[in-house]
Amino acid sequence: MNRKKILYFVIQSAFKMKINLKHLLFFGLLTVLFSSCRIFNPSVMLRTPKDYPYSAGIDTLPASYIIQKGDRVSFRLFSNQGFKIIDLTTLGESGATRNTISGQNQVTYLVEQDSNINLPIIGRTKLAGLNLKDAELFLEDKFSNYYNDPYIMLQVSNRRVIVFPGSGGGARVIPIENEYTSVIEALALVGGIADRGKAHKVKVIRGNYANPEVFKVDLSTAVGFAEAQTYYVRANDIIYVEPSYRPVQQVITATSQVLGFASTILVSLLYIRSFSNTI
Image (spheres, rainbow, N blue to C red):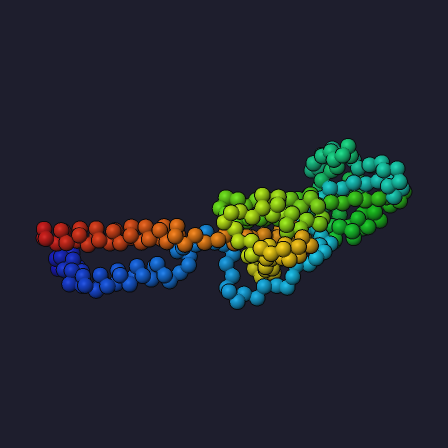
């Protein structure tokens, strides 16, 4: 059987099945329209089922931050327990970033992938895995060999939180400059909840993204708003405000997509019909 006969056989078979194709198209369109909410809300992220077991209330006090690989740690060294407030930090060392804060020199150092940080005088020292207070005490002991009663001040300068306020294009990454930054403050730093955002459905996602803790915060009531002011964020938290639905606009958009699909099918069938008549 040559190619022309094979093509003719396929086209004739398609027309013999035209009634079934119409039924299939009709039920296919219904399925596309009503089977999945993703057709109407494709931009919604971080979905959770209605019966999702959210974690208990967010900690009202921030946990002591654990230094991690990739952190940039500001390091300041004083002698005599800081009595004279004389900064002895050596500036201009390789790998250091120089900043000036309130007239004081401040240097930041990178915690490398091997967990070490390269500090002046004492050299490479492992800090990853220690909280800030323990790291300060550890370094004070190290520098006591070189200075009288050293006083260390450490701060992680690149801690951040990701905030999605409830509208496309409004997401921001904000630094944690205050140890006691609440969920409310973090939202305020990005301009508050967007017009489309659901104030009663704010999610705070924390920890390992493969198995995170997910907290739900209700900011639509005065009680929930007051509670949220004592909910403090941690580094790498994700604050996600779920966007509200606009049924009319979304139905129109979805319907236009379906009609475009249907018109493509109809044009294809008409083309097959006209092509078969010429054979």
